[in-house]
Amino acid sequence: DIIPHSSKSEVGGETPGRGASRRRIITDYNSTSSIAATGSKKNTTLLNQEMSLSGLAAKIRSTDGLTDAETFDLAGKDPTTIANAVTAAFAKPFENNVRLTFITGAGKLERQKYHEALAKTVTAALKEHGYEEGTDDPGTFKMQHDTNKNLKTVVVSPKLAGSGATDGDVPTDAFQSMGVGNGIRIPGSGSPVYMVSVCSENVFEKMIASKIQSWSQKKTCGAIFEEIAEIVQALQDSLFKGEPLSDPQQEFYDAVSLDTLALKAGIVKKTMAAQVESGNITKEEKAQLLEQVSSKLSAIEEEIGSSQGKPKKLAKLTETKQKLKKREEMLGKITPQPPHKLKNEVQITKLRTEMRPLEKLEAESRGRLLSIKETSMLTRKTEIEEEIVNLENSSREWFEGDDSFAVRVQASRDAAAEKRKQAAKKKTPGAGVSKSKPVTKWVTPGANKPGYWGAAPKKKPTASKPQAGKSGGMFAAMMDSDSDSD
Image (cartoon, rainbow, N blue to C red):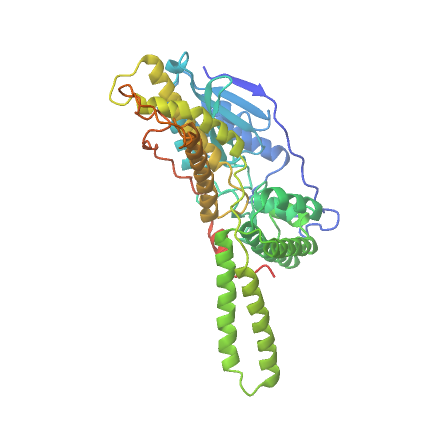
């Protein structure tokens, strides 16, 4: 039967709130619609839920709050059974953070124990509940290949109660409706939006350096702070009206300060301006900035035309126009920088190196039958390609738009292709021979045939397109914002 194997994982600390300074105005309500139940009521709810499940589904749910990490070996299990179990187990969010690993395949010695469709079955069932691939945030999963143990796994970070919708319509980092009737939406606990909202200024500066690197990401982050400030104000207004908040809303309200949000928004604005002045922007970001300036200049020109006879207003508009012209000139002189590398670039490079001899084998074996060893080697090539795509997708950073991420992934692939091209030139027979040296008179048949590195370019395997992460309407609106760095 399915045996869970316990393992240790790092447990993040809780973010201290400001409960002492802000208390819930209404304390005597007993609303059953509150999402986060407490005490014995929570335990009873979980107990009833476990009793309604059986088999593997019940074992998966039993990990909630008991362990930090569990592994389930799916050897010998039918895909239909697995699909039903996963669908039932992840139908509702978990109360506690736990890392679940499902073994869905193994090397050639153990491969026959696993149905070939297990990985797709598990991920398809997760996607039905809105789980996304590529990160470690709640409500996501990753497909991995443990080369040391030669095992294929699906690692799941379950959705947490109060951190996302259960119907899968809204991604894990979007704003969720956590009210008891007020309809105010707050960010999911543990999501990037939540993290930047509740952290201190010092911690936020470190986040910018490691997780919000590009100008475009910072621009989106700045817009998010405006959204968060509106949410906090709405929660405060609700309390002043005597309306109760749900537990997640109260926790978020206690943890976030409007003053701190304003300070962090200032940090974002300052770092964006510095990034532009230093020329550390991409080609796409430069084009966006120039378009913003051009749009503002057009608006100023129109306003100047309609302000004739108003000397004070005309002088002010003329001054603004001159500033915009200087900014346009400054932006025009910037030499765009390549996008920063993927965070998993080192692992991806190692896998690409491992795949090169396998690509050579694939090219040389076309049109003939393969040996068992060769077939096994080419199977590994397919596995490597899948691992590379997974590592690419998991390199997506906070508040990174689909287009920006696609550019970074393509830049990584282009750099790898160029590196291979240069390596091929160096290894081409006769590539470094001086023209002044005498040419051999006698040539044996076939001697002039180019070797592997000098052969005509082989057809490259179709690269998997990087999976664009889902994004809510809020984030789409943010990316369309015309706000500038200054």
